[in-house]
Image 1 (cartoon, one colour):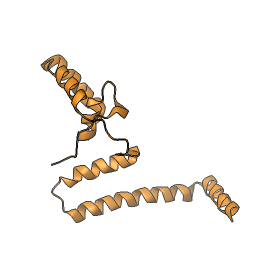
Image 2 (cartoon, one colour):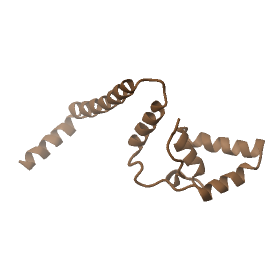
Image 3 (cartoon, helix red, strand yellow):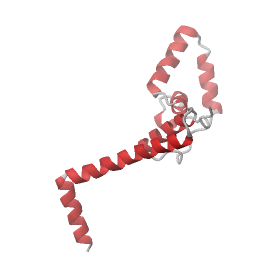
Image 4 (cartoon, rainbow, N blue to C red):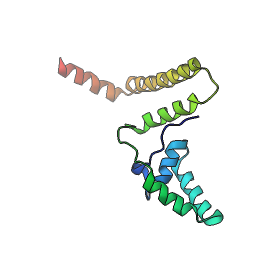
Length: 129
C-alpha cells in the first residue's frame, strides 16, 4: 500500500523532523515514534543515530501547501489509510460523506443552539442590508 512520499515534518520537529515525518507518514502519534526511537537507540543499537542523521540530510522537507489545517490533515490521513483496505470504493465514499455530514450537522447545531451567536449573526446580516 502506497502512503505517498516521505517528508521531514519541520513544523512538528524537535530536532530535524525525522520522527515527526515518520509519524505523519505512518499515521502514528509523533510522541510514540520518538519514544520508540529513543528505546531503539538505548536498548538495541546506536546505529539508529547515523540512520537518523542520514535521513535528516537526504529527505526533503514537507511542502507548506500539503496540509492547510489539522482537521484536514486528519481527514486526509483517514482517507489514505482507508484506500488500502478491502472495502469497496462506494463504501469509502459513503463513509467519507457521512463524516462530512456529521461535521456540517455539528456546525448547524452550534449556531442553532447558541442564542448569542444567532442574534449576533442576525444583527450582522441586518447591518449588511
